[in-house]
Each structure stands twice: as C-alpha cells, then as structure tokens.
Amino acid sequence: MAVTNFIPTIWSARLNESFKKNLVYGNIVNTDYEGLIAGQGSTVKINSIGAVTIGTYDKATGIGNPQELDSAQKTLTIDQAKFYNFTVDDVDAAQANVDLLSGGIVEASYGLANVVDQYIAGFYTEVKAGNTIGNDTTPIVPTSATAYDLLVDLGVILDENDVPEGDRFVVVPAYFYGLLIKDPRYTKDANVMRTGFVGSIDNMSVYKSNNVPNTAGVKYKIIAGHKSAISFAGQVDSVEAYRPEKQFSDAIKGLQVFGAKCIKPEAIAVLTANKS
Image 1 (cartoon, rainbow, N blue to C red):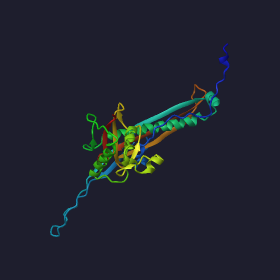
Image 2: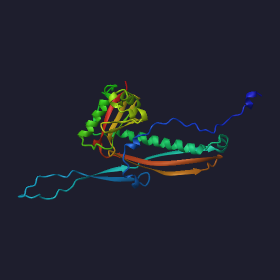
Image 3: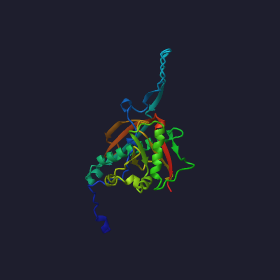
Image 4: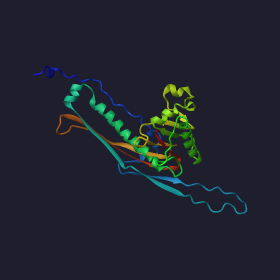
C-alpha cells in the first residue's frame, strides 16, 4: 500500500468565503408598500392623483363647478419566488469544526439578494419614451473626457421631467466608473478618493455595480432616476431547518417572495453605453 494513503486530511476551521458583488439596486427603490404583501400571488393596488387645474378668478363668473380629480391605479404583483435548499453532512460538519450551516445561510442570503438586485436592474425597460441617450443600435461610446458629461445629461432629462432633486441616483458599471475617476471634475473632492465613496454628480448619488444590465458585456444600460420611480415589496416567506430522511445531515431551506413595479416611468432615464 502506498505511503500516500496514510497522509491525513486536515479540515480548516476557517471558512473561505466567496467574493461578492456590491448590491446597490435595492437602495434605489422605495419600499412604501412592503408591509401590505401577504405571500406569493399577493397584489398591491397603488393609486395616484392627477394634476389639479389652476384657473384665473373672475368675480363676475366665479369659479364654476369643482374639478373632478382624475385618478390612476397601478398594480404591484408579488409574482417572484426564489428558494435555497442545502444540507451539511454530520461527518463533514464534525471534521470541519466550523459552523457550515451558518456559513451556508450567509451565502444563501447573499444569493437571494443578488437575484433581487438583478431583477430590479431589469426595470430600465420601463423608461419613458424620450428619456434615453443612445440605444442598442447606436450606443454611446464614453471616454474619460465624456463620461462625466453623459451623466450630467441624464440629470438634465430628469430636470426636464420635473423630477425632484433629492433622492436621485445613477448606477454605473465598473468600466464606466474607471472613466469617471480619470476626470478631475469628479475627483476634485479628495474625500471621494480617500474613503472609497463613489460620490455624486448633479445631485445624483453615484453607485457602482456589476449587476448593470448589459448585452454580452458590451452594451450597458446605465439607469438614472428618482427613488420614487420603482416600488419594491418582498419578504422572507419561510425558513425551515430539517433532517433529510435518507441522510445523516442537517438541512435548511428558505423561500423569499417579491415583486416590483415602475410607477413613475418619467422619473428614470437610461444611457446605453458601449464598452470600447
């Protein structure tokens, strides 16, 4: 028998965690209706009020009959359901001398959050007609000299749609952020570089994410907007620990349900940027 057969295996007590993306799209939506959902298939009816007409007063004719307010209703449907289900063998757990179940829960929680992040990112398709710069046919190719200006242009689109100045955002991919930090207009605040904070442009909080929607890693959809544009609602519907019948192991399964709705398409703008 080979001597190598007698070499023992050492199990490390330190868990090697995977690299993780920055999850940011959950920060750019509102959760005003989250407390109203009750499980997969639930819906939330969102009412909005139309504009009130302002008239010129004439004491001879008075103000006439009162205006009947217009109302619109949109439905936020909880139509997404994602789960995890993993097990840790009793022998593996004993040999590893590490809390693999807890580590698994951390990884599963991140995995669910990453799925939600990508789901929200997909709402760039709800943008109002005309609120775009470039498209899949003629994408914009940004450079270190133009990247900053392109984000300012997105802010102008929001301005022209009367979008409030506060709670604005823009999410850029890593390569676009690399162009921004080559522009002294962006890096003039030394605190930006020192702390690693992504910064702001034209009253928009700038986020960096590897979940920016793209086609084949080339045509990126950079979304700018206001936090009120997209409503998100989600909840952890169930988490259960159990012993699989045919294994000597512990297992944990979980389910999360969620949904989102773009309720103000005029409050988002999209830049299609081609990575050169």
